[in-house]
Image (cartoon, rainbow, N blue to C red; front, top):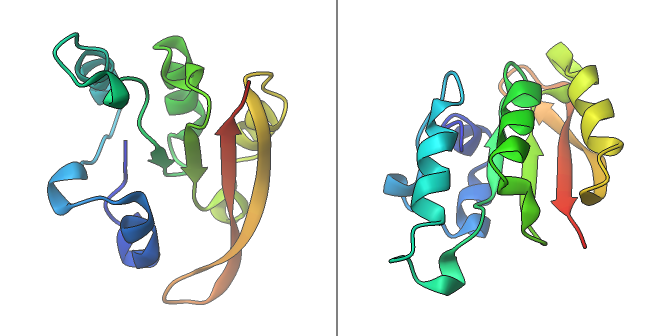
Length: 131
């Protein structure tokens, strides 16, 4: 699940993820995760592509979306990356505590960033599913 505005703020993320415009959609309440679970686990999908996609979450819904993603087994595939923006400003302390203490993750850390265009310091929370 991706907030399309994230690629305006961080255009290199789109390229790093190998995404096209049609790969990007916006979720306002997490319901799309149920559809993604069906698509990414469908038996007709190439087995190499089955599993969970990378996710970029906005601070407003990141904790609830992360918990829903975990419930739907998106956080089961080793190497899955979850990135949440604006975790310092306006902030998502509960999400950070949840991810940094989550036993499914091999690591979770803050990466300094800026809120564009105002230039406020912020952080991205980067979490990686581990073995």
